[in-house]
Length: 316
Image (cartoon, rainbow, N blue to C red):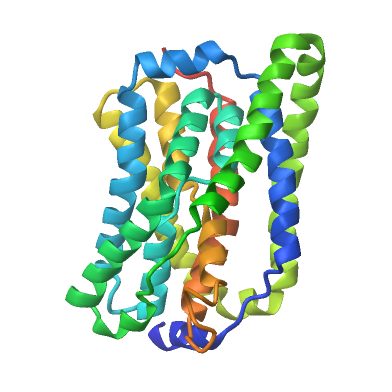
């Protein structure tokens, strides 16, 4: 297994900038559809009862990187330094925007989901580099010094991050809420079609991602699948476990499960493809492959859980 994963380091994955832009545009429409069912009072309720939000942020910002570090220690004999650093990078990224749709689909607390995504993304400009430096540093210094080349300093443009968050999350959220408030009949007619569109879009994302990199996935997928399955499964389980330990409502438990297990791996890919952060001569195929496959698998796992919960009414 180690030798197979070691061969990944020299692999280059085909993810075009145009494709990522197209995904972001569609995600904005998805966010608009989610916002059609949101009211301002819902956010006020979240602020009045901040316990769930605080537990959720702890789960994302501290819990996930910590459990990831534990996983790479336990699997150190079988995984390469670049694969381990890829797992740490994914854990350092904020929650993904698609988690908002999944929370709504699974009858979870959508307002809490949006709040967690907004806050974790807003603070990611310094939390993501900090978590990568801290946990990556622990891995290099105490587990495997051969990963030192992968421990690059992450520079995230604050303005660019704000612009991305505002376009993908802020504008669609505002427009959706305004539509729901001032054009309630139109909003009600749009809600169901937007849900179906969102579901079809995420399925299409998986198919396209497989199609563009089919030969690479077939060649290396078995070992990477196992690693991401363990990593993502641990994230989902930890989110639900923490929410249960703090005796949060069932809707909030569903939200924290999804928010912890759905990471913005797209940001991880943007960072990995940035030559100012990771030089082109650096063999980081292992990091790229783990990050890219996470971006596909968390859609599959998230939608599977959402579909299961969508058929069950949350316990009061």
